[in-house]
Length: 364
Image (cartoon, rainbow, N blue to C red; front, side, top):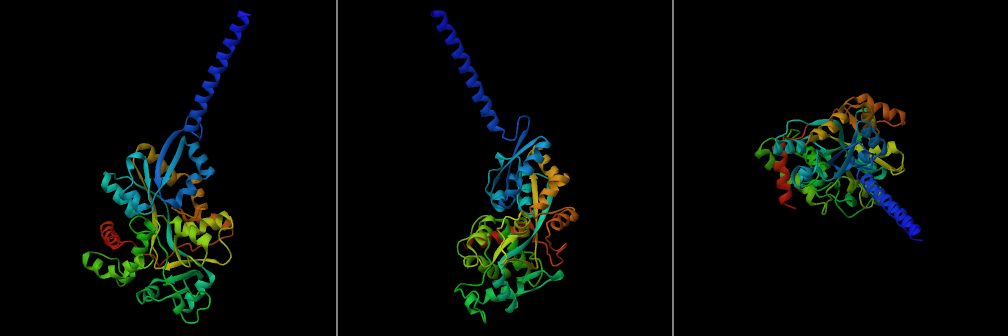
């Protein structure tokens, strides 16, 4: 009997050891979900790129290069100003001005710009028709509809409400005609909106210097303050637009990639009555990755040069450095977009844009 008990005890001990080993191995596997042997690289990105980075095809593409890329999201200006970047190996805001600030603050000269996206306005057919009657929306080059920022600023300067537009039976809301944006203190898309509207308010010239800044700030600040509460990431107003509809968000500032990406996915979120307007003028938001380590630099290089990752980026609506990739993805899906937007302007310099954003932020 004692021998039997001893064999049972030994057997139990072996089972226990194997169980503990299994737990340890399982725990390690949980730490590296993409598989053993991959180098984990952590970055912080603008929220509009989250769906791209978490897509299984993108995860697998990085894994084939030995990388397990994990990301957190934040507003692009947050990334440049308040996020603790010591926790990350790359920062990937949605614009070159935000990236320039990171480079300046951390003494980094390297950057990668694998794709870009023009700013646009997501709206609905009844709103587009109403604004066309008011002379704010018109046909642009190639037949695409554009929102004339100069005419729009005339309405906002007068404090025009929707129910004051002549013949408006489609959307007689008792609130001001305004594009919904994000918080300019935190988000790149709001900074790009400031770049567009300040250009027009400055007589169709890029704002340069304190005198011009002071001249345009009263008009452009009103565009943000009159909205009331604003969210800190572009995904917020876009999701409101998709879910809550025209009543809450008749006009939402978006990246073209957000709208086109949803169309390409065919998930039903873009309904038949929804429309996208390009702003006239517009600004290209250049998604710029700043490497904070050697592995972060590898991520930037792969996004810029790897054909598979480039094609996947285009499938999410991003315009890659090779225009043919974006065009081919659209064509295969039966979608279209202008090959080039000629009415595009550059944002102000980093210093000018920062000063204007700070002044707008003080009034919040």
